[in-house]
Length: 235
Image (tube, rainbow, N blue to C red; front, side, top):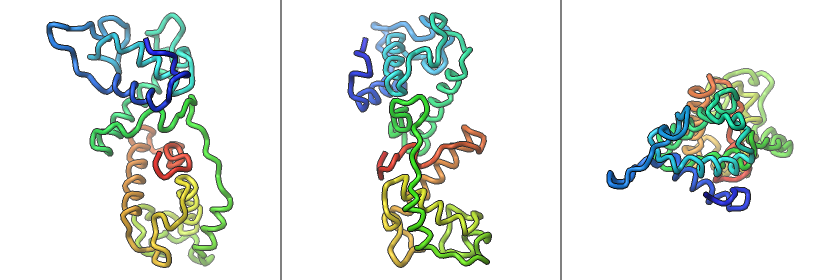
């Protein structure tokens, strides 16, 4: 058994959980181990993995989400699906697999810790009114243009086509606050429409977030840049 996750480094916990959950290499035939579904009832996400990995993985999860086992499970009836949190957890693992496989070339770049950071629900990131005022001053919009599509008012709009131009300062302030950067992190000062490598990356991240929301949340979700970044350029 691993030591309680609350007493070990969270980064180590993240590595442990993904080594356990996403590695399905079985032992050689001479050392064949019992599989999770042979020992535990109602196994879905751990199917095909050695049974010995299940409990350490569950232990790691309690630290990554800052919860007890009964947050998802019915005490002493662990196989039951009575709690919606268990179904949500399964969907989250499917989402992690999708993100890492489809958007990060199979590398384990996204984990439970990325968003949750020892909270059952990802912590809310506070808004920054100062950044909004800065964005409004930098992007003055005539009253007649506020409800026009952004691409009709600003040059080289690609990821935010169809968004009312009047909402663009709020959106830019949101990005700036979420990543803890100034506008020039993505844009060339004085040439805001010019493409930069960072701007291209930002467009890819927006496409990833949109695809994830459509696939796992039916198009409606609070999922956004702050959930992973929490005020840092790199999560």
